[in-house]
Length: 209
Ligand code: AP5
Ligand code: MG
Image (cartoon, rainbow, N blue to C red):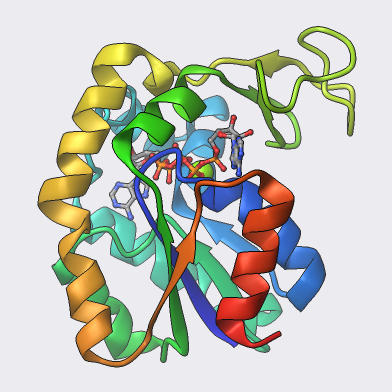
């Protein structure tokens, strides 16, 4: 099954993807994670995208589409994938349709107030990428990942100015994808407001699992 996770920044796409990976036994492909790994490695891609991402703007379509095209050509996605953070623009969605057939688009629905609360408290493991939250999901030992012992930090794009920018960009460029995929009969809505376990249940119901 080829799945897309759509939704505003902070909706919980990455958190749910970590759970969906176990339920569906499919790999999680997150363009945000790929970009952050490139930044950490100071690769040419990382150097190119760092300032854009930190400011909450979108990386250009050409770079992003090429990255996803290469990633989806690998063997581990033959049985399917969970694509999180891509497509984020109509041209990206049109490009994706030319090299991969999407089966379902899961739209994680949450108001801005929920997003601000989640992003304001998010902490991420630098090593394994696990998401924590200062209120909803604290690591047992401060700033240390429960899963791998890595350092838990605040993403550079979780500063208030960058969060506002990401929300603006989402509304202008990504939200139109909801209708784009609804018209194709591919969209399922998931209420992303409750606690994680309940969102997992909403997700399973929406997919008929
Ligand atoms: P990306 O990494 O994709 O960021 P995003 O879309 O802004 O989404 P987030 O990762 O911020 O939120 P999320 O929905 O995954 O929420 P999470 O699970 O972490 O992209 C980053 C940047 O890369 C972009 O801004 C852009 O610059 C670039 N980029 C990426 N893809 C691109 C593309 N296709 N084109 C161009 N540029 C691209 O949860 C958030 C917090 O809430 C966590 O602390 C978590 O613990 C908590 N939480 C989650 N669920 C719940 C719950 N149910 N209850 C309570 N707390 C919860
Ligand atoms: Mg994410």
